[in-house]
Length: 105
Length: 181
Image (cartoon, rainbow over all chains, first blue to last red):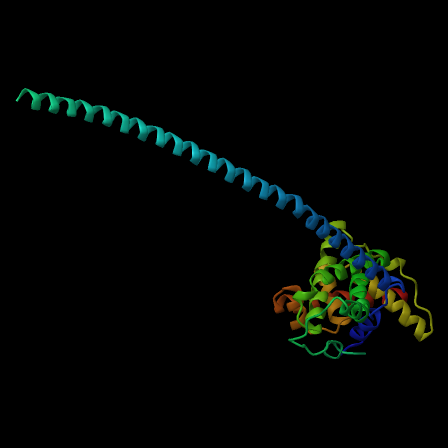
């Protein structure tokens, strides 16, 4: 090992940072932690109105769906009643014709 | 002087660092991180600022690091990369004038101090990668293989940087000594 390498070791010996460096870093870490916690807490509180809005939207959607189903059911009932009425009239006509033919015999 | 192997503790694979361990890691590694930054940037305030950023990053990644040896390796790597980035951004290659260096006096101690000062100035004039290689070799006592790993460089490149930088430093020192005589 030559003299230059020894001199380099001496020249590049480790040095200490200022005495308050450690405290400064720990304070920065604490500040970072607080900032992160505040962000998380804000997010946590934001979840309450978001959840409420989601529940409300689900209830409204369900209600509208039930209304639409009820309307479709009423329409189907009306169609069925009309169909039965038409059938009844046709049957009465047929019955009348049969009755007339029987009387003529 | 402690060697790199003595400074680096054996890995403990199962050990997970908690937040509480951070203060101990900071205490154990602050002079290493600060010195790498200080020797490469030659500015105490900037070196402390950079070292603080490195430790904040360490705190964020604490759970990803498996052992103290891993932490030491990670700190060297991140500090080295940040120093190189900083030097590149600020174009901090300081022009070194050997003529401006103070003349050595007759006492050996004083001569040593002046020589160290002159060497540090010469090192700060090296290109950023060569500078970091010299710092990792002679401050951190890392072997070329370890430097190659820390700096993500081929071993041959590290060796040739070392060889060239030492030759350059030797030449400049010899010339300055010749001028003094």
